[in-house]
Image (tube, rainbow, N blue to C red):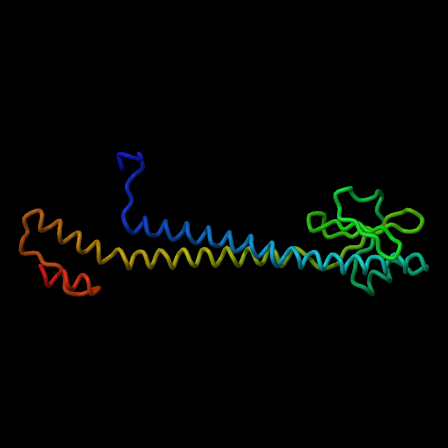
Length: 196
């Protein structure tokens, strides 16, 4: 136990491993958040805008008398009447004379469009718009685990020669003056063994 902190003292190997793990996790979270803000959110916004234009087209076709099921199948969309207008927090646009409310990914990617008669129609793509975000975070998590494992291997390779030297010094301190440092390993240990 470390007297100052009340925590058990960790070997150099574990301190190195922990330091690398903390650095990798912090870096991964920073990369993830930056990528989300700089790439994924603008992409989602652009997709939402494209879907809004498509939803207005759907409403115009419905108002012209097209069959909603046939239209949904042809455009690969889910088209449903909405019982109430969308929440006030939805991003709102006015496209070609129709009020449009973009629900965003938290509301399932539904775009609501108000028809001329005041009723609302919900349009949602049949594909999962949140899938790229989930796959990105899963991939980043796997890379974080792999980088942390590599850091543990590197910490072991760095601390092993030092542990050999410490063991040899302990044996000499106990009176085994015939014990020598091994002359293999990193150059620094070889130099120390020859100087012994």
